[in-house]
Every structure is written in structure tokens, then in C-alpha cells.
Length: 208
Image 1 (cartoon, rainbow, N blue to C red):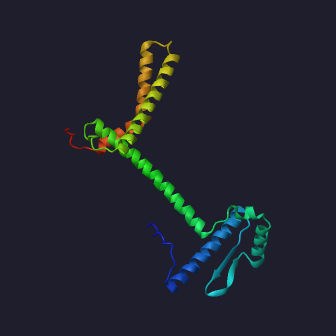
Image 2: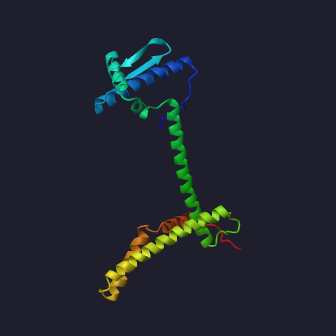
Image 3: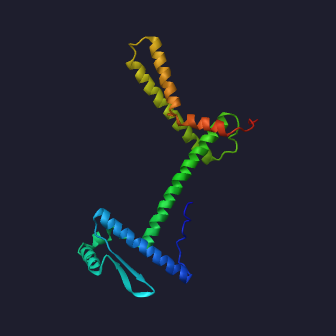
């Protein structure tokens, strides 16, 4: 069973907060120990608790002082280079989520326009109610497919020129095999989209 995602907010219940602190503190120290041992890096942890005026440190007070002294010896610019506060961490997470959302929106938009293209070509949907944005995006998808077709045609023509010494039957058979490989291999993005669309979409033909 998948673990339930924890909501990152202050825990108001005292007993739950103390239990979570104890559990998370042990996990944090374990992770610091692992990265130090496995990767051979200097690391330390200082954890202050509201219930205990004395902080808990790892690996030891002298070990913590050694790491902090090494850090302070660095130029200030280098110290701040990879420093991250809670605010900057959240800002980074938000930006990452926004970038992922934008990417998904673009992918969904391309699929939507591919479906619209095949619906209109099959006579299942009219473009009379399409907006200018829809038409511009649809034109971009069509141009992409045309460019891919032209690229493959140029490639086949170049290969035909190099094999002009072969007999006509062999050339025709070779070109047919290349076309079959292109279609079966999914080189044309619209071929797969057409197959998927025809399998998933069975509307009543559009009557203008």
C-alpha cells in the first residue's frame, strides 16, 4: 500500500508533534550518518528542541565544531552559493511544479490538436466553431507533420539515387520495405495518433 503523503504544516497536537519530532530526528541523523559514511564527506547535524534547552548534535560536539570551522573558512560568496533556506526551498519546489505543469499542458494541447486534426479530416467535427488560438495550434501541428513527411521523402530520394545501379524491381521492393519500416516503426507521429484515435473514438459522422 502506498504511503499517505504528509501535509507539510505545523502539528498543533502536542503528543503527535513530539512523536513526529522524535521519529524525524532519528531519521535525519541516520541520513546524515549514511551520506558521511557512504560518500566520505564531512557532515554534521544540530537539532534544537522546544522541550530540551540543550541541542542534540551529530556526530559529536568536536565533530560539529570541525565542520562549522571549515565552513566559516570559506569565502562568503562560496558559503552562500548553495545555501538554502526554507523559503528558497519552497520557492524552488513551486517553480519545479510550475515547470512540470507547463510541460504537461503543452503535451495535452498537442494531443488535443492531433485529435482535432483527425476528427476534421474524417468528417466527424467541423472547424466552424474553432477559435483563432485553436486554428493557429492546429496549423502548427499540420506543419510539423508535413515537415516530417518531406524529411522522410528527401531521405528516400537520396537513398534511391545511391542505389540507381540496382534493377528496377529491387529498387521498388527496397523502397516499399523502407516505407513499411517507417510506418510500423512510428517515425511519423501522426500515424500512431491516427491509429489510437480510430481505436478510441467512434462518433457519428458530422453532417454539415
